[in-house]
Image 1 (tube, rainbow, N blue to C red):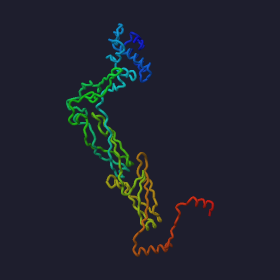
Image 2: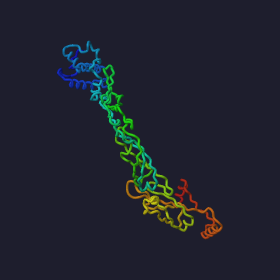
Image 3: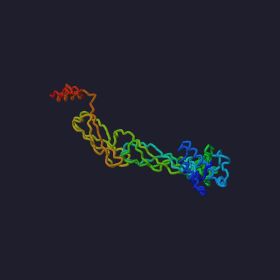
Image 4: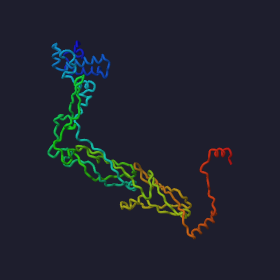
Length: 392
């Protein structure tokens, strides 16, 4: 190569090593084959690389300055010198030592955050509506009581890995047409931690945590429904190495009630009354949802029942809405409603006297041979047009 190496890199003859390296990085960004694949640029990239190979090596640079041949006879020695590394090209594009090959990550931390945990909790409808506090027994990972999370047996401690010298990574060198390609991979001896536990704790086998059952008190807020999750921060799995615990999520499942059906914040229930009571009217005592709480003795002042008036002539399927008797809002104020649906029960078996009395009532009401009131549920388009043009 007849061109002056200093001129090829664009530096002065008294340039120091940092200046030479910066100049090479700048040119490598412009001339690398991945950026400019044309043959002329590739040839110039090789010239720049040869110049850097010589000028970055103190011994080769001294030989070149004295007029000697640093390549040992021609350009065939490109990429074979001990001073050239593919990591220098990676530095030119990404900065730092071997940025493209994963260098500089450092050792993996032994202490990491634990995973979140999820458990299911079955509650009664009244507990979901008005809130409750339940005691839970959970099996999760906790800090090892013997090593207190260090993973090392008492009296011992982790030591620096002799293979990677605490870096957690080791270099792997391969040769290519560009020279030495240096990559980095996790150290197999310490599994990337940078340290080795020579005497693992016999209780946790070096993990820093053990499985244990513990008891928690969880407060279920009023108004929860099936699928609602209550978050308990820091009550989940303790992390490896005694790391901070994750969160515990309690997923609520509400059991079916014998009387009430929940629909959002409203409660629905059905009452069945005899035909005579629906005709004459009556008053019923309807149990409340609060009665379920009063039964367990936690609050004896709750209203156990309320009066429901059945008006005379009530038809089957009629609904009565009792405002503010439903489920409290989970995040807000107020309560939903209680919707009571009335079903009128028609007797199926009558004795002679009952049949006689009903016959007398039918005669008095002129209902001995009722024809019924039949109404069309829909009309065709033709019928609607005919009625529109021929109004009665």
